[in-house]
Image 1 (tube, helix red, strand yellow):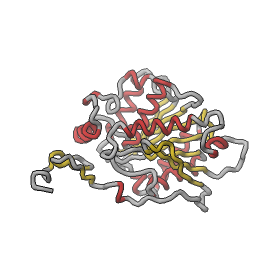
Image 2 (cartoon, helix red, strand yellow; image 1 turned 120 degrees about the horizontal axis):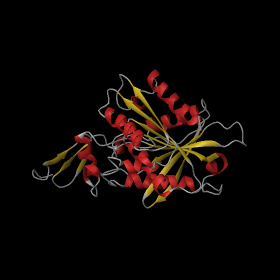
Image 3 (cartoon, one colour; image 1 turned 180 degrees about the horizontal axis):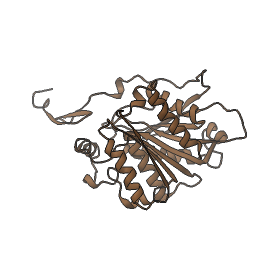
Image 4 (cartoon, one colour; image 1 turned 30 degrees about the horizontal axis):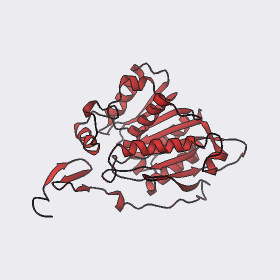
Length: 304
């Protein structure tokens, strides 16, 4: 780059932007190792990938736990990975292993969505791709969808949506959209938001708005859910995790508080991870605290 072109015009938590509009990600997903689907001989969780759309490119990784009763259908979980809307993948070992662990612990079929990331596909691609994944799941409601595992084993009257960090934010938008427009053939029972991002941290808010050229400013409902959207959330139960040492600690707590005050008729649970940092369970899944978080998620799902 020439000297002027090399001038930095914006610098955010996860990337910087140069004068010629080049974006440099600090942890580019392209450099992150992705792993193929596999069968785990220890847990008997099987996984495989499916393509939802080629234009835009949207795919999912499906996890099927051990089936012991062919006559009994299982709840289904749509999982939305984190990564600041610009990093990570459903196919990294971190997220593959995390979602597989949920499938085994909760005895749930899990569908982990690979959505479009900034800068290749700016926001709102992440929201639209995740909604496409939920609609794809709904296409199996009558047992004649494109994926046999869902046709044969999924109970679409017991659907959950979950995500961490940016994925928690996307999770909210999905269940909000269900509340607004419905999802024929599907009942979304619960939503799980782990250390979610919502507005309140200036640096992150400015970064989100840069990634979303068509934003509505600091009042954008995807950043700051309105009371009306919260009141008609399209599920019965919500589980929110907030980590004490997370810079988004207040984000999760405030979301739970605002949901309670909105008049929404469902049940809200807030779990505080005292002494812990943002998404500790993804980075250190072997720790007791991560195991406890996993068990909380499984318990929440199993009550359906």
